[in-house]
Image 1 (cartoon, rainbow, N blue to C red):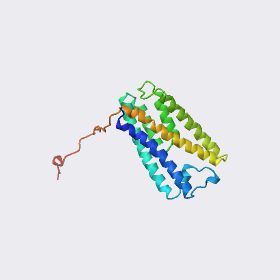
Image 2 (cartoon, rainbow, N blue to C red):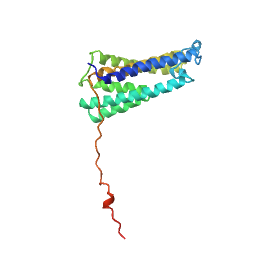
Image 3 (tube, rainbow, N blue to C red):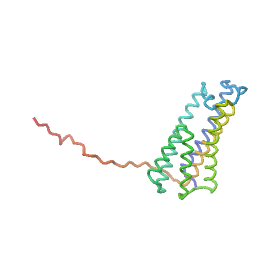
Image 4 (cartoon, rainbow, N blue to C red):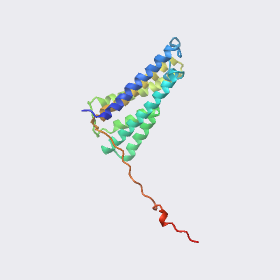
Length: 207
């Protein structure tokens, strides 16, 4: 039985993939981009209204969901006994990935791969699949940069689209890890004050 938290990564992957291709379709329909000049970048498709408004909200919602996935993953790894500094490093790089930094995002997933002694929910091929997708993302990212300055802009744009689809799929795979979670809760721990605050009744005025 899969918990409801597994819906979040799956929804992120589905909505992001559907959203960016909808933006592409709008851009082609209203002729904001011209396919005869080459395949456009995702950012170019979302640069002109009305699809720019949809693209902006898509990025905002996607970043928020990705950040929430990283936070849930942080608590899951903490419960599995991952060291605090290592877990915080994973969380930090994951949050950077939520801001759209694909290189840091691949690095964050590789950190998770290094923790092989932890529980690995799902089929045995999930881990190798993640590593393969991360490697492919890195190769495509380097290829995209080379093709952009060649210049072969259309091929570079195709690489960008492929990277985006792979990253969405990678976040969607967290549905497997969250399948064993029934829920989550937020706990606040009180800090230690250097000195207790003075109450109004304890204040005295000396004349």
